[in-house]
Length: 135
Ligand code: 5GP
Ligand code: ZN
Image (cartoon, rainbow, N blue to C red; front, side, top):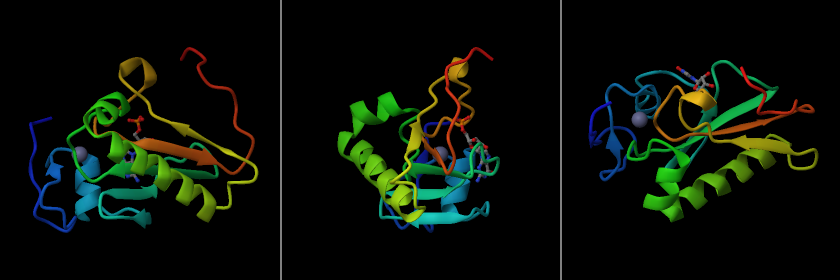
């Protein structure tokens, strides 16, 4: 992945970095279609193409600047908080607040991270199995 360029496209955010080789940047720009759940000035939420639970939504910042949650938290804690707030809004809209849900940030190879544009998985809709089992 490159250093990123300044996005001037449909994200409407002049200061958001974008990487033309990043699948999530292409989804934000609309070049790759997705089922959008929620969008704010700096965040984007859409359904995972391979859902691991009845509700599986990815919540991402529009900027490509941060590869994982730790980098986001260190670089822009306010944006990290926005991501968590958006997860809560999506959970409420999906009717998950009462029964509960899981938020996951996969980080690096051992966690199975495949897209290095920070993203939060919001999972719910049925009792979820335990996690952390070796592959
Ligand atoms: P990771 O494994 O990096 O934590 O999560 C990446 C997620 O992106 C996976 O759950 C995968 O199913 C999802 N994903 C990959 N490509 C696409 C796509 O083109 N559209 C959507 N909606 N989700 C995708
Ligand atoms: Zn990206």
